[in-house]
Image 1 (tube, rainbow, N blue to C red):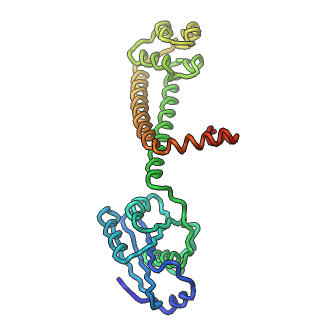
Image 2: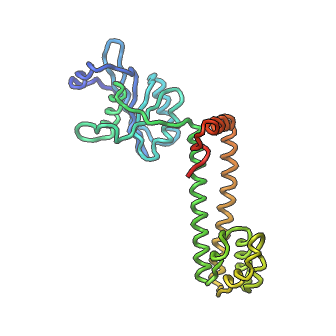
Image 3: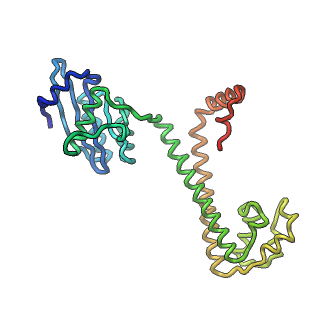
Length: 285
């Protein structure tokens, strides 16, 4: 769809045009409305509006359309997570500006997807949009992995809490003696409980390291009433924790591999901070 700018819009041409070929995108879950505004050498303005699906094939068609029109700058709102695949497929070959919706005045008049796209394109054309910071693609990929690893670590912590509650329900007071219930000794004892061992002395004898100095206290703490449903719950929680630990391990390997290109820069930063007395990058609270 191509049309001429209205007389009211023509009055806005007194404003300086920063980008002669710009595009505003109104991004939704299933569709993307694109409005391209082109300022011709004679000062005339052309506007083209098209709607694309958000499938990969359709977004690639959008990229081809923008390339054919020689669009140099594209802007869109940071709407949930829907902007991310659009950004990833369009960022090559042009400048993409991601705008916080709270930093942009609402479109005048009745709100429609086409008007939103036109409004974004017009603001972009005159250089009136403030771009949000978008890390490079390798950094975005790394951030996704780190965030998911953090989620799994939190899930594991929740499973540890569930396991302790089951032990308390069975009147097993292991946490009163062992500072880390899921340390090597604690895991051996819980595994034995799952296998059906309930004798307090036998369980206490599984202690290793400094915990062996607390055998009498352990015998008292492990004297409980473990029933069959406790073993089922402990078994499921224990298996889930093992799965989470394995997942965290594989994620960490992937994260370390992706961090390797930045190792030299990280070491230089740490060394500089250490010599300058700024330890904030070396320790986190």
